[in-house]
Length: 161
Image (cartoon, rainbow, N blue to C red; front, side, top):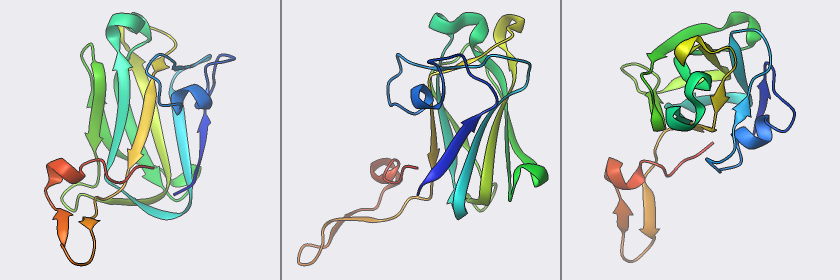
């Protein structure tokens, strides 16, 4: 599913491209007042199960997010907070499940708000951000064999946005 990604602010050379380039050596660096925002706008209403961030306190120290709020809605103007995550010196992928009991959140617009940084930092570094949809059964050998990956462990990352 195609989406339009935007940021509240970014230092030159540290924007959306670096946030989405699949390299943990690059990062988005904000450049302005808090809170710092990642906006993801979809062309149609989509199902979202999880958001994942790659953060590294060892490299980024005071730039590392300490509190992240995830909001969803139809547009920027009707966002509702669906999850708040407090982090303590994260290093690696941080996975945030969305959707409550149903396990699926339906929205046109997703906003990730970095509300606070470690050591009272001003700007933030987020090395990667991924949005995941619901997991579907994968037929490895369709037809005669009927072998499928049905366990959550095997199909965990089968759908990526």
